[in-house]
Image 1: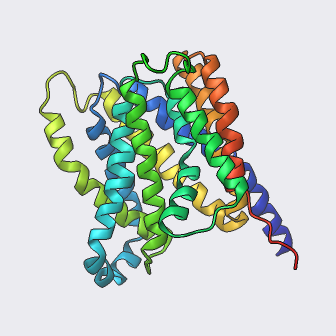
Image 2: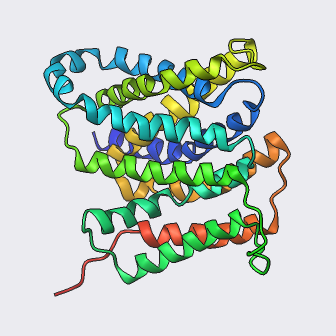
Length: 304
């Protein structure tokens, strides 16, 4: 039994290193999708496919809990709007005018915003170290967004894509916080399945409108490939591995995936898209990564 547990922990530790690579696939796909498939259509396809698989896997539990779902359906719709519409389609919208490297760096502050939101909204206590980490991480994002041009900040023209990504990151923090606030009898797979259904419903009217716009071939091979790629890797793959590894290792040990996100995203953007990181990216990462570590590292209890 002990050997089996050790093997499971080793496998989980190995897979944790894979999670940020799967997430970075979404940033690359977002850039590949420009001019191929609309952001809402891609998000709809991604979460409809992922949701169908999850509903199939959790069908027995969903049926048993149908009375709860009937009562709490608004919660799953709101979570679908935050997690699938805004954190899905808006990322793809932002990728039309910003780089995959920027997306990865800005998204890296999500855990910082979750802790900050928990302090402001849920009255969760923040230590001085966490407050300093928030300041560092937010300063790093600002450095990336303005491309390090602090001296010419007044005359600087902001890239719209960075603002779309920043809005999506704030939405992800809200998505995570609401899952803390709204209790549910559903297990992780069934809950995500219900949220995917809510997100698919929310995305549908926007995707239908987008499908009427000229210049996009909705279901050619490239568009279909992007839908399947985003559903399989950053959708089902990353979500499942992260959730399973948390159960085996605990949330704090799995947090390394959050720290590795900007590194993996920048490397993937360089290899797949030819995006050479600038000094403002390196400067931003030098602030963001330590800031995230300071905010999310476990707080040691004081000796009494």
